[in-house]
Length: 90
Image (cartoon, rainbow, N blue to C red; front, side, top):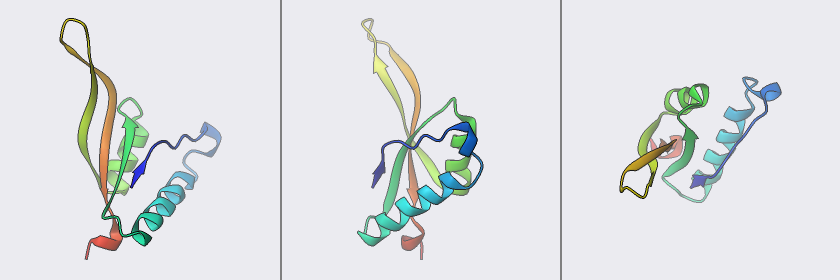
């Protein structure tokens, strides 16, 4: 399952809401027998990156980039993460 975007205002960050929303996404993915949860996070958002890599046991898969006219890649600064689901980690 791919979580496209979760954005929380500063007033509700660090209150457990993000963890709750990701828990609901994980529950939904498990119920429809999907073995992993994928999402995109901005590398500049260190708190979110730490949350996904630490608490949710996600691993970095791909760094997104774009091709410039000179044929050189410029990073967007986003990571695509893959999270192991607890329902499949037996």
